[in-house]
Length: 95
Image (cartoon, rainbow, N blue to C red; front, top):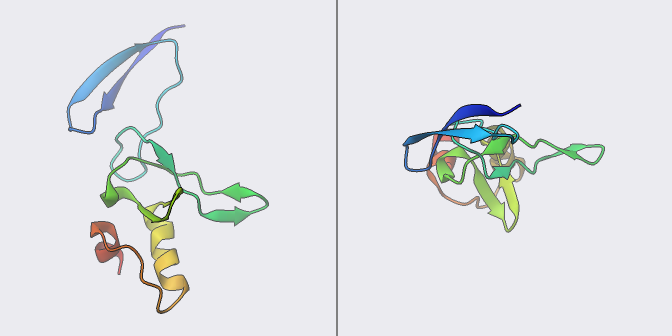
């Protein structure tokens, strides 16, 4: 069955999309369409997988192909003293 959904685009505009497709996952912070998932390891081969949009305000990328949600970004920053995490707005808010 076809269904529609309202999504928020990166520029803040809203769009109504309609069709037979899975609902897009929304960012855990701003509710925009997500394009990445949190890579924090939970154990047992699992990761957090919280959805995040591309904005640096909604997550950080401490290494290539590694993204962290706001909660795990804070844990990562506090995990190793002396480590220099990437400086962005989210990091400044959390510390």
